Image 1: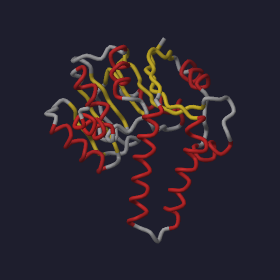
Image 2 (image 1 turned 180 degrees about the vertical axis):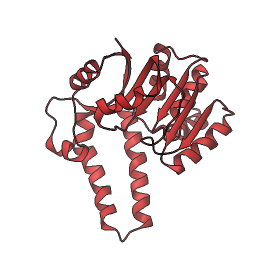
Image 3 (image 1 turned 90 degrees about the vertical axis):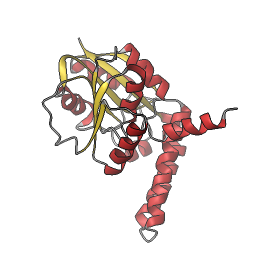
Amino acid sequence: MDYKEIISDVESSQHLISMTPAEKLVEIGYTAGMNSNSSVLDLCCGYGEMLKIWNEAFGIKGTGVDLSKEFINEGEKRLKAAEIKDISLVCADVRNWVTDRKYDFACLCGEEFGGIEGTIHLLEKYIRPDGKLIIGTRYSRVDNPPVELIEFEGETLSLKDIYHIFYANGYFITSMATDTQNEWERYIMWSARRNLAAYKNDPNDPGLLEWCKKWYETYFGFRREYEVYGTFVIEKY
């Protein structure tokens, strides 16, 4: 058993703020036609790990935008260590960030602005006429998810609902990848460690402890059973 490789994989996965596995991201990048001439914009990019993966796999060039200075600084260190020069990361609020550049692909995964429809409209501002959108979002395994899940997450759509929104806005899904239980566990525990660290830094804030408890209870009680995360490539029809 190659323990160093296992540890290296764990280290990399901690920087991928997505429930879609890295190998699945490579798969959808390939089927979507990414290559060394492709330009990719990733809004709410976190550490920029998706861009890093696609650069290493296909040689894409890209821009990542995220509000977190912590994520951007760490992401830049990782890009420098990997000697990747074709990816730039910007610390900014994606709602206010502007550029005249048009991209082949525009992504927004794990966050939404005005629901899925609003997210589509936001991304459309940045793509070329034949560009593609990549949207990562959670959805319910069942048509009527438990009220506890809705109270925690807000509106929780089914996969059929998501398809109908894409279609109503002129898009078909042309590639998709869903989560694995391993990726859910990795993401949930990554978030749980950050929540616990925040509480330890401020143990007098009862709201932080309550949030930690709520995070675990909702995952083990509802999210694990009823919630799915998917990354969708959509194209205009």
